[in-house]
Amino acid sequence: MASGTERAEASYPEWEFSGAAENHHYLVPAVLKALPDGPVRVLDLGCGNGALTARIREAGKQVTGVDFTESGIERARRANPGVPFVVHDLNEPLPGSLRGQFDVVVSAEVIEHLFLPRVLFARCREALGDRGQAIITTPYHGYWKNLAIVVTGRSDSHWGPLADYGHIKFFSKKTISQIARECGFEPVRVLGAGRIPLLAATMVMTADLVPAP
Image (cartoon, rainbow, N blue to C red; front, side):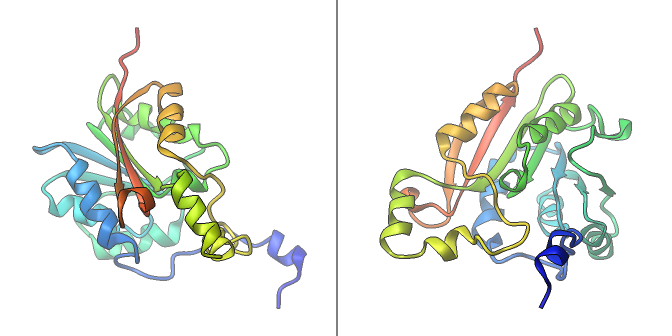
């Protein structure tokens, strides 16, 4: 068993599987429904092993995937040889080759892992250039859902305090909209996905980039 020091010095987690994650049965349809019609250019920001990226491509979009984990990008490239994938840390500005090249940025279940969540919107702005749209998904947290978690005694299993590299930010529809506006995006809609709306598993925010004055 690893000591506390060994755990503190552990490297970032590696991707150990290819293909869809457990939540993709409700997450992927919600993301695809949020995408604009037509052959838009999409950046999948925090693409992991590329499973969602592949589904976006199957929907007829021109898509590029970006993730900071080399193991995820390696799996993505093996499974999707026709899709460009880039290893890049979201905490750093996008490389010039990705700036202003996209109509839509998709970031699925990423922002809740970030100590500095506003950097995600900074990367979206860089990728979009002067105009475009961000589609951000993150687990939903609202009054009734949080109350249900407590009443049913599922707090420990839901919040996962013993897990390494888990969720560190917990958004409601109000707070995900607020942070988007702070970062220069205007939310168009925030919809729940998975289960009934009051107990939704996740939420999908579509937000337009506000043009610079």
